[in-house]
Structure formats: structure tokens, C-alpha cells
Length: 127
Image (spheres, rainbow, N blue to C red):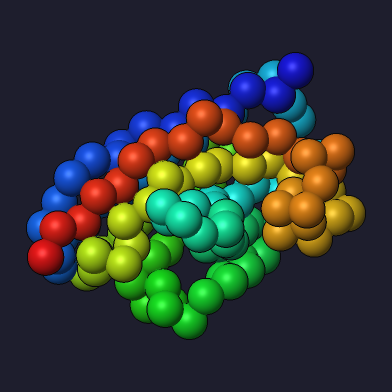
């Protein structure tokens, strides 16, 4: 059973930085893409960024481009999201997901059959 545990969230002021971590267990890293998603209050969950098993990075939003950087340490089975120059609109619950290789990473937004979710970590950015 794949388990994903996010950490690193918190409250910061606008312009600050946070680094999220997602510790994964119970899976073979070569069989999954790993990604970050977020859900703001009253909004649908959206993709932030994914890393495929081959190391390709997929960014889903221009609003986060250049500010958010995803990385993956296969030796530690850990996914990271470095978030810089945070804005109040980045306030959301951030989730880690492991998506079965062969599926588009954001397919997990439509079907839980293609992957697994963590419980999320809250990020709050104040102005």
C-alpha cells in the first residue's frame, strides 16, 4: 500500500518561502510519477507540478512558474516543493500524489484509480 506523508507547511508572510516534503513508502519509485497539487478554499483541486519516473518535470500553472520548483530524491523516496516569493493567492492545502506510470500525472484529479493521495499540508500566506 502506497503511503504519502506531507510536511513543511505553515504560515508565512507574502514574499516568504517554504519547502514542502512528501515522504513516500510502500511503492517502487520507477512505477510512479510524483506530483504536487493544491486546493484553495472554495476552489477545485489543481495541479502544481509533477515529476515523471524518467525525471521529466511538468508544470501546470504559469502563476507558479519561476517561483515553485519540484524535485525528487529517489534514494530517500521523497518529493519536494520549494516555494519562493509566496503570494496570498498561494494559500491552500497542498497535496502530494503518486500516479501510476503511463497515466498523465494530472489524471489523478479525475480518478483515484490511477494513484494515491497524501493527507495534505496547509500553506497560509498573509499579506
